Length: 365
Image (cartoon, rainbow, N blue to C red; front, side):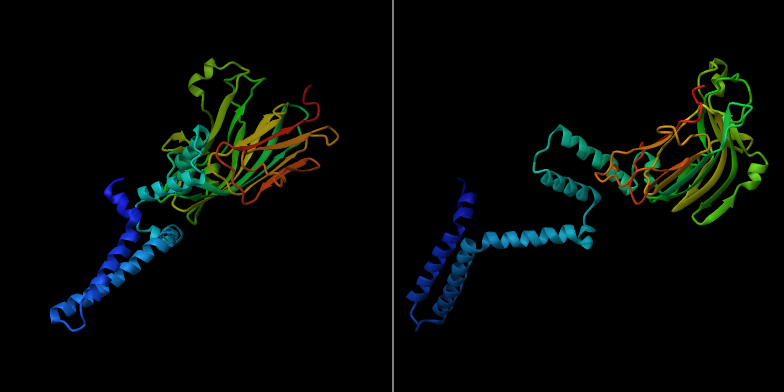
């Protein structure tokens, strides 16, 4: 045992012994003495008393005192916002990791390390608005969509869909954000068409954007054909076989060059748009994948071509790891030819989404 640990262990006893020695010296000095000895007498009395009191405190109350002081100190640091302001971000990160380690009860293995790494490197950065994927630094306050599938025309194999979308994106970062306004992007299966045929599968009907409170109506741009459906695979169009899918997207003409439509905002971006989609009658599936976090989501799908007498004629599935609750409050509602889903104040993560299948009459023929 080294000197330091020895003193720490027996500090209380040493203080009491030294205190008694000083008090004995005090008692040995006579009351009638010279001024110098009188000063020494008083000092030994004071020092002796302090040492004895200190020794008793060291033995009886030190550990409890330190525990209470440290607990109050730590609580003040972590529970009062003003105290945390005194620390650098990297220091707070280290504190956060220490707390995580303690909460895991030191039982860290490869599995828990993966989870903690995902929390700190992805979800925590996403919450701070500092994720390396800029899409994750913004989120949908709400995303509402309505699809109405019109009755199939007798003379052809296609159906027309009216698609309405309204959403608000909030910026969770400190910087201005530029986001792509995806008018609509669809993979169309031209089973009966030549790949070189001009065939419009989607058309923008209306578009209104409000960026940080400033609104723009793009009705004139739509009227002047500023928005046009283009085939993204146009460079390889000759190599695409007839039954392979071709991705088509509505793009915006800027300086005589069509490109993806983008908008910039600091705080809030509200988008309202209506689209007409023309697709094959046999194209019975619809899906939506979230590219940024979403708090409130609503979709209503109405198909005039389904028969309510057919089993599972309309199905909607939410694929989400976090929102499948034991009581399953989040579930689709089917009424006649309409199926809908509402997620209120939840959290749908990027990569999650929904899928809908409509078993239309005679769709296999």
